[in-house]
Amino acid sequence: MAGCLFCAAPLRHTFVDLGMSPLCESYLSADQLDRMEPFYPLHARVCERCFLVQVEEYVRPDGIFTEYAYFSSYSDSWLAHASAYVDMISARLGLSAASRVVELGSNDGYLLQFFVARGIPVLGIDPARNVAPAAIARGVPTVTELFGRRVAGELAAGGTQADLVLGCNVLAQVPDVNDFVAGIKLLLKPGGVVTIEFPHLLRLMADNQFDTIYHEHFSYFSFLTAERIFAAHGLTLFDVEELPTHGGSLRIYARHAEDPSRPVAERAARLRDRELAAGLERLETYASFTEQVHETKRRLLEFLIGARRRGKRIAGYGAPGKGNTLLNYCGIRTDFLEYTVDRNPYKHGKFLPGTHVPIHPPGRIEETRPDYVLILPWNLEDEIMEQMAHIRSWGGQFVVPIPDVKICP
Ligand SMILES: [Zn+2]
Image (tube, rainbow, N blue to C red):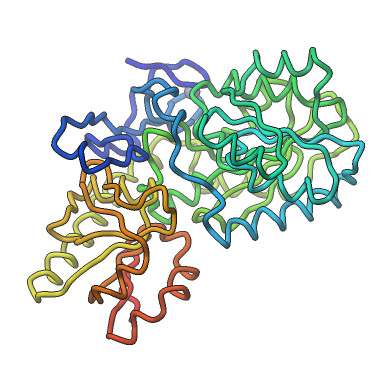
């Protein structure tokens, strides 16, 4: 039996078992379709001692991260989110040309570029080899490493520490959360601030976002578990914001435990109380999630079977990781979904892992005029419906699968 990623207690309790699934960022080329494809158990468990929800690591992080297909820059709303964050945090912390910002999981530099534009020195750290050249091309120095104690120690020894350490949607993907947070402690200057954004487990459960569970996401955090993990490494969470991104995220603010200059904000205590009231420190709360997931699968299949029986044609929009969890778990292949489209040219001509649904450029939808467009990145629902509003000219309708199957004429 595997032990908890954080506290090493035995993992005996199921959160949800999504069966066998391929790695959801392993898009296939045409010549790979006839080959064997590895599937791994996608079984999320909850720790009985610290309540960290987690998926066991079956594949070395190297296999996941060295060629990561997701370039963050491709979503307009995400870029706007990054830009607004940089404005806010630069003002709040008074960052200047004398400061240093380090981003963990910096991708192609889409966020740090906004600090660069303000003349604030930055450093990106990202383990994916194929994103650093794009980042460097836009003026964002980037180190290709999996962040942890070793990398932080080397940077600190070389005189690089940060006034601001930030991470957006990287914490869940860290294979060794203790090593990662211990690294943050080493990298942070005295008086420095850490901000980390991650999908909020409370929202995942309340809004049925089971498709955000995949092999590349090892951990799923509540505020309470995040607070416990940071505290174990000498960092205090002194503030938190609830954000609408990715279906509901938290932005936690941390500082050195020994730094008295930033008192703990009232809203941190309020969120802690809400999570306790929602039962996030009781095992029974987690045990009830499975039935909710089963019901969503039945409803989505019911709709798809009915639509196909009536001769309707269905295409997908987007090829996100979460779409792959949903389609594999529900057994939705080209028998239901003719194809999907994506704005990321990296994915064009490729196929979704497991289900082998082909990925085309968005123009394909105008050419084939499907009756329904299934929105796989439901967190971008409004943006996509606006971009694709022209499907209504031939009577096309949108289908949003999560939190509950919804048809939007
Ligand atoms: Zn634990």
